[in-house]
Length: 378
Image (cartoon, rainbow, N blue to C red; front, side):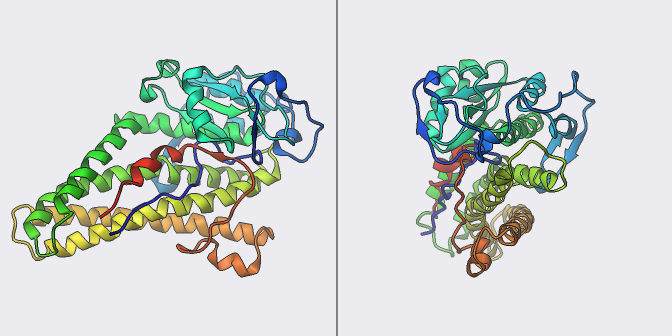
């Protein structure tokens, strides 16, 4: 029996995380003022930096990694502005920023001036754990009152500008993706339904039971479609955001961000790649197996199902190829920066090699589908 288990990578918050570890204080007035230092939250002040444009620019939808699309003209104006201006400009796009009470001992209260997150959505952040720096929740997510009319971004009080920008990019991608009419909740429900139907139908079937697989292949096709889109919206989106911001940082376009956060982003790309690869590879293998079974089937619809399954295979191969490219780029950055030993370099992006651990916080975005993926077994 094979089982897909997402590694414990973090997604929601980061988008380039900061903050190292974390003690949880129950009240904001307990947050100590820190002397400026090397921590990402201490390197720059929240008000430090130029102003953002007063008005939004005309829409410019851009396609990027994994076929994901976002309005680039809502990101470009934020490349060199202060944290407060990042929030002010981003909130013109129907998203609201909030702070939480989490912070690390050696960090600073960078986002102290933000309003405290309402209790209904704050509980999600709290469940994610002390190491999460940020969390994006789309409009109407799980019927929370706070999300009835706008999306929300929660960040730790000791987050930094990269975290604010990372989470805002989740909002930009979500805004375009929502135009398909398929919400994250709907995709999760479809995946769960088709997974159960496929498992129930094939759990005791042998490779000679072509009739069973011919019928169950319909659920496998839908399961593949749902998983591929969820990966694009979660783990692959994490890789996309960190790759875009990392490149802009390297080109001196993304400013007022700690260098350690750029390094942390590279590590996050590698860990997100591992998390995304495991379920996609497992379902790719299962799909290839079913294609071979259906080749020997004379059942009505078997040929059509085979064609659709082969299309699923092509998509998996493209996603995994691009994943490998971004992962290799990030692992090479890690090695060239001296952030990992030469002995470990070749295993950084190996499918079975050790994942590189990074000290800073993470994004909880992709963690939202871990429970679902953990149920996939054949």
